[in-house]
Length: 350
Figure 1 (cartoon, rainbow, N blue to C red):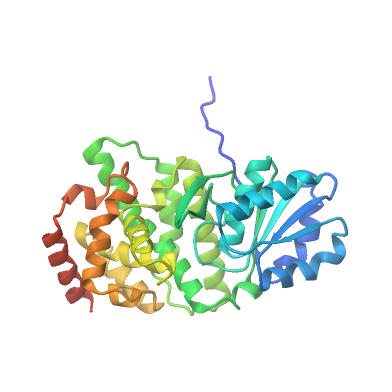
Figure 2 (figure 1 turned 90 degrees about the vertical axis):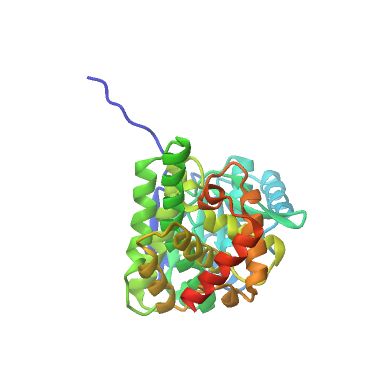
């Protein structure tokens, strides 16, 4: 009897705990990652530098490159540096921008990559996507997923609160993205993947009804695991579909119209609440309550936007992912109707 299965790349290890960075030296001694102990560190400023200093004594042959910003140019520069040496692996240490640069450079050079996260701002920890700045905008590139993910809660707890709120927004927005995916399946016959959907939903629902403090060890552990599950859901699906729908279309449009005004996770949180409200989803009360509880942005004003500015972003949103079918494409709202819906949304949730 034939065995039917599929092979999906997953990390060899996911280590989420206090003091996790103390295990980096032992992790890199794993011959599946670094047969010769020669590794290239890509380190972000701040906490990333602190971490590499704390483990440098045990990694005498390690090479350290400081990564400034999350640009495509920085990723190509890192890849060129790595090619000039003889390395077994690339180790990215820092926030999301640093990890995306390291993932892209590792993919270009055909090396395994280890992600050591100092913040939990978005689901790129274990995703097959690197979001890099290029020519004034952000572009998503397909990359190999990290072979190991390390999250030290002692360092994560020190990151700015808005980064943790961003991670919460990015995680719970999966519920809106999945609803859009199901809509595309019903209306367009788009294939969906139950395994990918289950992983993305599990991560989101693990946070949805929590009431403990965001700084607690249990909450941070759950958030880290949820973000990893989101990344793996994308790897299974072969696209960002399980975690990206109208919520992300709106976020991309906001970033294009008003770059740098708010975090990606904050933008998708507002986008998710708005899109879920447009669909009339049953999850809206719980989603709104979760965002309120953890002080995650819910309304355009929370992002520093007027209703008119948000309406412009909603109108532009479908053009950011022309191939994607969401509630925005389904309703095909004109500018006047979008403005009316945004006003009603704000009135409902203010």
